[in-house]
Length: 143
Image (cartoon, rainbow, N blue to C red; front, side, top):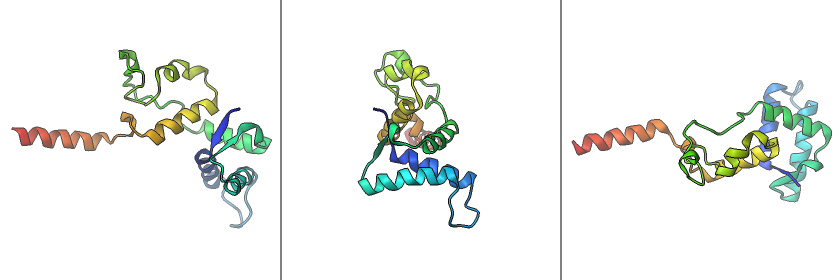
């Protein structure tokens, strides 16, 4: 059964809190409330993931609207899987994930996003400016 990670529920809640702030500072608008109920249950159960089937219709719709606001692909146009790597150095996806991406559903895509973010080893998570500065400094010190 497909699952949604708690960090995605948190992100969706924050998306809705910004999009539809509470009118009185206390009452949550419907999308935020539906996701907060899911989040509260997860915290109570010490769960890091929730099954999609366990979401109410409103929570699922609110999560999907948040999902539609996120980048679709982690690709940074530096694909090492095309060079034979099992895992892309650019985005962190496996060869299979790169090949299947367009056919994956939102839950599968977010699961992949979660994994590559936690791993944090792909070039997309490196700071290019810092790497360039380090390389320049190294080149200057070797001159």
